Image (tube, rainbow, N blue to C red; front, side, top):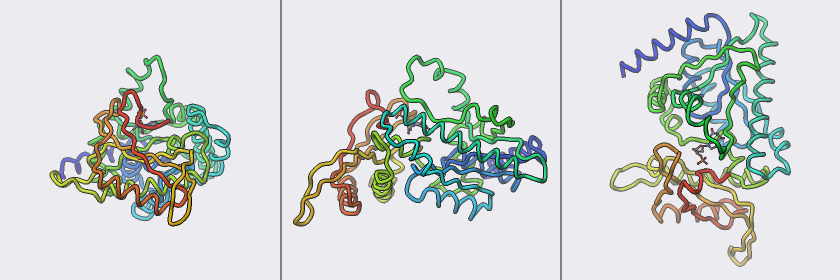
Length: 333
Ligand code: XMP
């Protein structure tokens, strides 16, 4: 609409005035905030923006390709895709404690990003390289980092973020979404031409499948989990609630599969199976601080379970998580 159109014009002008002819780099995760920030900055300065997309091997099915199709294929933005799966999995080998896993993923992420940023600075012959680091910081993040969260005595989970990176890299910070709430960011994304499904996607944690594979992360586990999770999400999108007409994907705030590295006995055809277990998690929440498990229709659970067990060889049992937050958290690690 015209109001959003005006907002985009103003934001574009502001970015151009701030950045001038200097180069900007941005860490693209595929999440809503960094995607909208990238689309907006690209609208403003085109090829002066370089996005760095780090694939840590713990993304969802086809996620990397989808990000590249959108940003390179459709928006024609410059994106460097770094395939760091081996590096991340290597560092995670033998580590099963959740906080230790989170720290490794966070640290490696910063290392990989820094290396790319330095390479970009060094390789740019036209001027002195990138001067700006762009981030998809939104208004609630601004409040959170200055307020209640930092005063909390107990850290339940150390969140993956890139705080401190601009200083370490000697870059100025560009945060064009700093004044916006999440719904405004989504509207802006749609107005900039990002697809509805990308902009209204459930949140996905920075450490990705790393915190959805319980205990030690292995490539084999990630591959099984990715396929099970994709089936769950596909069926959530397919199943509509009769009274509202909305899909169960839209009726839940977050939904995903969790890989349990234990084996149980099953039967398939004439044979015995001895395979892994997957738990399904779906919650409804307004703020993610508390959450209720979602009362998904049995028909949906039934379909998802039978599809996962039939289609994902290596998983022979599916369970549904009926724990609310608190005392459980949304993610299992
Ligand atoms: P929990 O599991 O603490 O999760 O109830 C609350 C919300 O935060 C997300 N989450 C993260 N997001 N980096 C993120 O960007 C992280 O390290 C991280 N850990 C949890 C979680 O998916 C849920 O939406």
